Length: 112
Length: 115
Image (cartoon, rainbow over all chains, first blue to last red; front, side, top):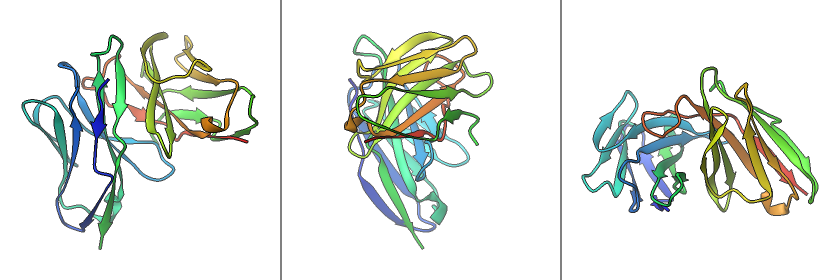
């Protein structure tokens, strides 16, 4: 089963770029990496998804190295409203049955 | 608003009881996922249904069961409840059966408290 590891927390000043890395050493060959954002008392919200190399959308970039054992979520110029918990999600089809594994989450605190 | 509706929002029940959580997916979504979120375990994947069929199974206890109905809504049944089952239960939905190119939309969750 894929195991994911993320830093527990990070602090950043407003306007800075934030990079959050998730390690997923057992990711299966054809599985994707997805990142979600969660505010207190709300359900997680999709940020970005990728399979390899780099993916960019209007809110974030996702960097995935060739071995795919990790991924880095990059948030450009964070603001106070980006204070939230960020989760990586990895699919694992290597154990016979398909499963989805969330990391423990990284609590990002943006400081004015 | 994600378009995913979960009811009830809050539920308080006693140990040993049985409860049913309900989820209505976004219009057009065929997949429904159930997750449990607790302080010590984080977000745990329980089970996924796609168009009425079980698609993937995670760390779901034998006391828990789920199903997806022909109208695509889903129910998660929790029985013989224990104090440790107290958690936030999320439902999510997506269009396709797999993870690729799939954005899952989460509901607001059902907070279950077992006393």
